[in-house]
Image (tube, rainbow, N blue to C red; front, side, top):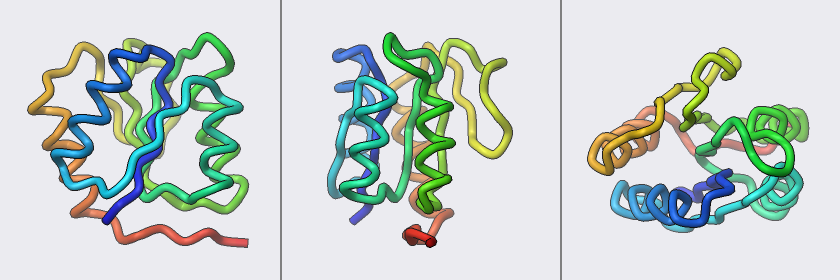
Length: 121
């Protein structure tokens, strides 16, 4: 069952995303509220999917994703943000606000389209 890393600094929205991921089939979830916390979480356990907000109070989701990828984690990325214009290419982007159903279906689609990532070194 897939492990999901959610990078989101709003506790309530993080719970909203975690619930959608659980319903989509996630086996485990970790929510990180800062860039540094996300990097540490990915180092402990490589995610099968990363769902990242772009703007965080401490760092950015895009910088966290770049660092996690540089450390050898090849996981698909779903940017969930109010600032889609700030997202790099290579990840799927969903603009906030988003419905729970749309988010759940998008996460389920990501699970179906991607094999379990491996840490490349």
